[in-house]
Amino acid sequence: MPLRAHILIVDDDETFLMSTADLIRKEGYHCTCASDAFSALEYLRTKNFDLILADIKMPGNANLEFIEKLVKEKNGIPIILMTGYPDVNTAVRSIKLPVIDYLIKPFNFDHLLEQIQLALNSSGLSPEEVFRMRVLNVLDKHLSNPYFTVDILARELGISHSQLHRKLTALTGKCTTQLINDYRLEKATELMKQNVYTISEIAFMVGFNSPNYFTKCFKKKFNCTPREYMKRLELTQEK
Image 1: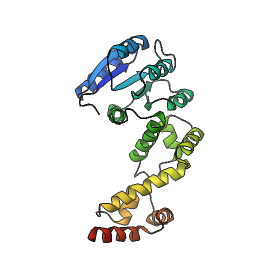
Image 2: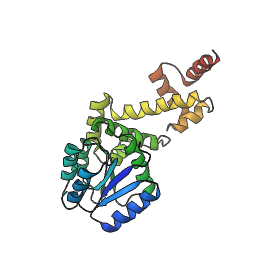
Image 3: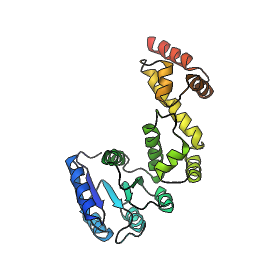
Image 4: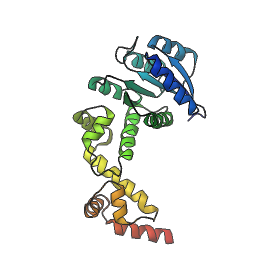
């Protein structure tokens, strides 16, 4: 990630554009503002940017035309889309592009900063890799939530349950529920390696509201109980 990343913000709402740019500059980033897709493309032809924040509906970009043209001319720049008018079809089209997030206005500025950091770390990744990173980011955010569901994941990604299932199956070979479960269990092994928490504490930390069910799922995935796994870690550390 560049030390002082340069961000292009494109939005026809001048109040939003200027206030967002001011807040981002206070975080130490360089910002250039454009009020339409045409001027944004001119900036892109003369300057180098590390990230683009772009509104979906504005002059020169009735939907995703600007972004699709941008990808052809400047492939590899991560993009965060913003809209006050969410649309499922647009969200689905965005999956095929290097879009890090699809933010619905008004959004929390702290969340935007998190996505900016994520985007800058994803520079150069393929759309598939970016989508996978977005999924893992949502899973990590909800790691300890026992009520997290596939529907919540789909909603935060801006796509339908069925579209999410098809996309993840193609990318990972796993259904969405299995992916969520496996992610939590892998995180559990990371916590076990710290040798700080009890098995029950770890179960709750990774989103299981029953230590017994956590043990059952853990044994199914790793062919040993959490206690046996932790014992193996202790023996390895003693050597």
